[in-house]
Length: 165
Image (cartoon, rainbow, N blue to C red; front, side, top):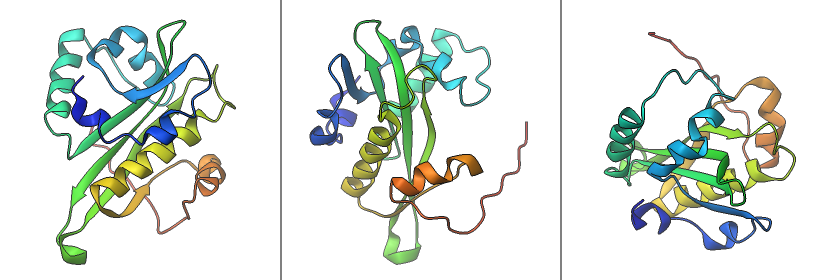
């Protein structure tokens, strides 16, 4: 994985990981470390070959100013146990400001309660600040509102979706 994403990480947050865990940017080899299995605890992933994963990873990596993915790896098992993304929207409003969209936050059901979700949100928020976002938004299910409020987010508006597939 290129150093472009890692250069955006806030080391003070990354160093808060418990012993045996590391926070870093997504790497292509994470396909083999259970990244997609972890995402399947959040939503439908489907069948994705390593080639298809690599193609998408290469596209994402070629747009580091648009999309950043952070993971936490358990070093002993070489398993991805938490992840989240921030996508940067370039706007005309607010004098051509940037808006961060946090997406796909998931912590392995076996690792919940260790603070990994909070660390991922803190890291993505810092990345948004470093990129110059004027705000960072996310959508979540109702039973996760309390968690995100503890991370400094406030309910605002209504999130809606139109699923085309």
